Image (cartoon, rainbow, N blue to C red; front, side):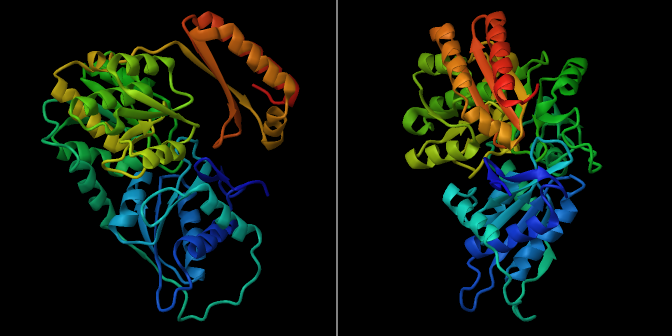
Length: 453
C-alpha cells in the first residue's frame, strides 16, 4: 500500500483502489483522531456528504460503518458540495466531517476528504496519524451493542448551506442573464436555487446526474457547451462548477474563459477598492500565470506564493491573516465567509461585483492580461513518478529550459497529487517557443521514466 493521502484526501478508482474495506478503515481511524472517540460519557458526531458518482452510496455506507464501529454517531447529509460539508461541520456542531468525492475526475474515481470540527481540511501531521492507525490497525475487541454509533439521514442540511451562500451577497443579482453548468455533480442540488433565490435569470445546464456523467464533457473542466450556450442566447456570462462544486470558472459574454487567476485578480481588486484586502495581499500558487504578477504590480497589491494545493494556500492565509487566495483551476478561498474553496460562493461574489461594476464580463475580467500558457500531461504511475523525482537528466533539462526562457517565461514540472500524471506547464510571450521547449521536456521525461503521453 502506497501513501494514502494526496494533496486533497484519499483518491483512487472506486472498488479497486478505494475499496469498502479502506473506506471503513478510514472512518474508524478518523473517528479516533478527529472525533475524540473514547472521551468519557461522550458520543461524538460526524457528518458525511457525497457527490453524484455511482460509487457514492457504497462508500458512504462503508465509511459510516467505520465511524459507527468505534462509537461515533453519523449524520448523512446526502448529495452536497464539498464546501457545504466544511461549512456545516461547524454550523451543526459536529466533531468531524467527511466528503465522498473525486472532485473534477471522471465517475470511476472517488475519494474521501476529511474536515476537522472547525471545518478545515486536515494538516499533514493529522493525516499522518490517521494513516498510521490504518496501516498498523490490529484487531480490537468489538464494542458492546450499547456503545456503537448510529447513522441517520439529515434532510435539512442543504437548506442551511443555501442560506449561508445567499447571505454573503448585499442586495440581489436581478437584471443579469446567466447560464450555469453544474457538471452533473453536487451543484445540481444547490446552484439553481441559489441563483433563483438571489433574483438572477438563469439557465441551468449539467444538472441531470445519473451516476456516470459527472464531469463528462461539462462543468469547469469542459467549458465548450457553456460557451456555446452563452453566445447562442446572448447571455451576460456563464458560470461552471466541477463535480463537487469547490471550483468555479466563468465565461464572458463572448464565450471566452475567465479562469481562476483572472477571478482572483478581480476579487483582489474589488476587495482593495472596498478596503477589505487584509495585508494588501493575494495568495496564489506556483502555477499562477505571470500576468497576475503584472496585474498586482500595476494595482499595488502584494502577492504571496505557495506550493500547489488549496491546503497550502489556506495555510498561508491563516498564518498571516490574508483574505483572498486560490488556484488557477478556480479553487478560490474567501476567508471572510469560508474555511475552504467554494465554487458557488465565488460565483455569487463574481456576479455581484460584475453587476456593481456596470461593465460587460469581458471588460470586467480585463483587469489582468494572461501570458500564453500550455499544460502538457504525461501519464505516470507511482514508480514512474519516483523515477522522475530522482532523474538528473530531467533536472538538467528543466534547468536548461529555465535559462532559455529567461525573464520572459517560466516552466513548472511536477507530479500531480491527485491523478497519475506528471504535469509540464510553460508560460511565455511566444506560444510557439514554449510549445517547442515543452515537447522536448516531455520527451526526456518519458525516456527517463518509461512514462507515456
